[in-house]
Amino acid sequence: MKTILKLLLLLFLSTTSLMAAPSPNYQFNDFATLPVLYNGRVQPLDTLARQSLLSIQEKTSVKRDDTTISPAQWLLDMFTHSSAAYDDKLFKIDYIDLKTELGLDKKDKYFSYNELKENIIEIEKKGRAIAQVDSENRSYYQNNLYHLYQKVSLFLAMQNAFLPFHDINLEQYTSNYEYSVKEGLKAFNKYNAGDTLTQKEANFLVGFNSNFKFHSKLAKNSVLYLFPNQQDDSINWNNTGSELLSLLDPNQTLHPLLKQYAAVFSAYSKQDATAFNTGLMQMKAELATIQDLNKTLKLETQFHRLNPFYKAMILYIIAFVIALFFYMSNNRYLYRIASSATYIAFALHSYGLIARMLIQNRPPVTNLYSSAIFVGWFAIIISMLQDKYFKNKPKRQRIFDTGCKKKEFSELTIEFALIEPHLFEIFESVLNEMG
Image (cartoon, rainbow, N blue to C red; front, side, top):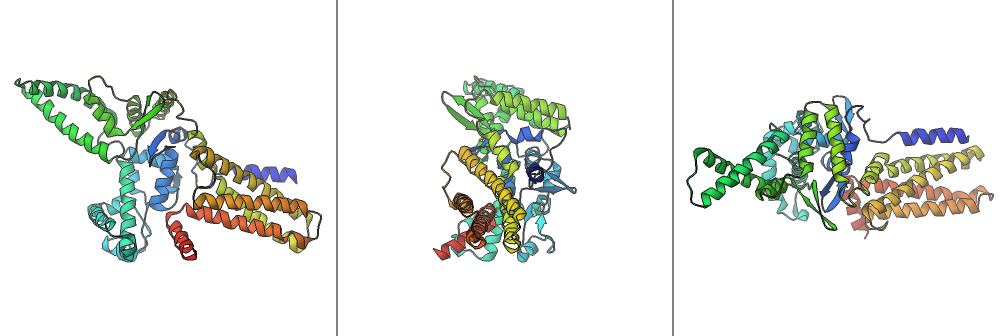
């Protein structure tokens, strides 16, 4: 029996829910561990991709041409303006009136950016207007349109993290800009000194002014800070626009990571897996020079791939069902299976709690989400202690053990639901009515 349980455990843990199989050529897993500062927290690109997909399509798997791609590959396609990313059916729209207004097929539930692009300007215009209306006073139509506006805004934020142009190569753009900004600065200084400019110098000055406006806008609007700069004991993060603006100082050079990102994107566009993987190795070597940056990034990526809370929830369900059959048949074999499943689930549950504490550097209970996880974890401890105490007592005295498993399943079901934005609103409204 122990052999069977070990095999089942190995099989269970070897499968990662909602994860695509890694490519045998491109090291998307290495790309997933690269850091980004987003919403005030340093996190791996894997987390950014997953949370963005959850917000946009309410699940983390991306189906493309009858295959499933990883969240990291999807984000890479967004950064590089891959045509496939524009055709991914990510935007979930349920409201029929909104589908009719946007000229969409009423039978479909998910839509691509290409299907929405003719209405993007109108969606953004109406979304900004609805944002000024108090959430309690919005109609059902306004809520649906505003949620779509938020999804489109997030999609565009990911897409425009480097450059908002789909037909410009980032590597070529940065190389050309490094040269033009030097010539533009010379022309700018000459013009300020009152000297007459040649036609070539005048062209450089016009381009210099245009680039300054564009990069200033990019620095203001970009929400992804991908370039860390070590300064004494602290790390300052810049986005793409800020890094390009830094070249206005003649003593500054382009951030090595920006050049490496550009090289990796070019390799990916050319389908050169070797150059892609080499570029990632260079990026990781560059990031290794920054103190205390990579401490939890790998742990956080592994945490998402393992998905311990989801797996624990499934095992708790299995233990609960098997325990019910045990109480009906009094078969000790079923009891041992249920107990083993509970212990394995508890180990996964504990790993998840500890990993979250290390990743977030916070205590286990900080909000409704973490409270549900922790309360369920504590309930299962009581369950196991009770089971140990009443192990040789009559069946009826161990009914509490099954009740705790049921409670644990309920707690983790709430926890799993809370990561879905639309379900969070449902739980929040119910809890507010109860409180």
